[in-house]
Image 1 (cartoon, rainbow, N blue to C red):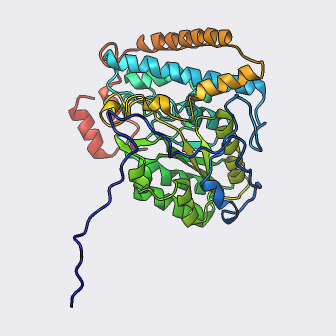
Image 2: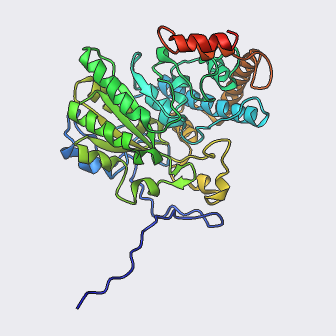
Image 3: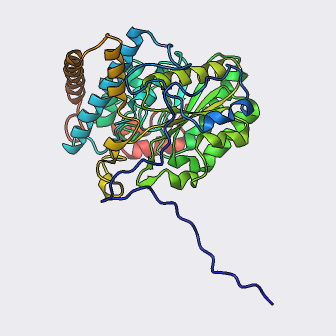
Length: 411
């Protein structure tokens, strides 16, 4: 007799709640602050496998820094970090408003993820190269890049350093260790590994950092990057920003409900760990640990930053159509700015009044940069880059067919 088989079916992962549901993070396991151990600087991937299933956290509910990952930052550095995050949030608010006013075509916020990029940048050295996604503008702000220049790029005006060749927020700043952002998600992950390999081949001391979102880890470039990083022990830090949402698709679609994103490094023999992405101190400590490993010739480290995208994917997105109302405020790891603010108040180095004053100062600074940028033009007013720029700086020597096209266009 032939055995009867049931019709085949597929499993489609589902998020914990949908629009109209009550936000529920009850299944999200949060280790206590200070609980995660700190492996030795030269720890092997095998000896720290557990780190891919826990979360490194430093700040507890009372705002105290606890555990083996605490103690790296001085008061002045903490205050600078708080200011960087506040500037990024105010910058986002002004540019979101500018998009709604028609001054630019598109914008993407870092709302809720400020600690990831701002803290990470402070663990790097000048000359290191980031290969970011579109939500790491904090790398530029924390690195001292002028806000006016960022806004010029967003407005695609005559002072745009990229001369209108990129979508808004796809910055490029080689001197600030910020490789040009690509709209083709995932491509820069393997490019970061290649850059790191080139640095090692040249006998340099600079490292690379790769950035990718949880959704883009499903691309082939992510896995190819891990192969090369593992095989050649490339001096690179491989960052996965797990903000729970890939456009309108929740993070379970990318990982197939299989363990964690950090655990994917295990198959390649790469030391991997998870960090509370809303904890400035934890992000900085883990970033410094991984950067020091890379700089010491110990190869790659994979870091999963566990955070939450509080805003929409972009100005073209309406998150209320696919996630529960109030879900961002229910996120159990809290707000990165509020947590660092509370820590400084706990230390007696900050106050609610001082914070309010700082918010006003920061917004004035952002408005001044915006006014200066808009004097150079916006999407709908003022001067734009010349159409001639389409042809220039593409090749070291312009080929005949481009010269002909430029001449036909009147340039």
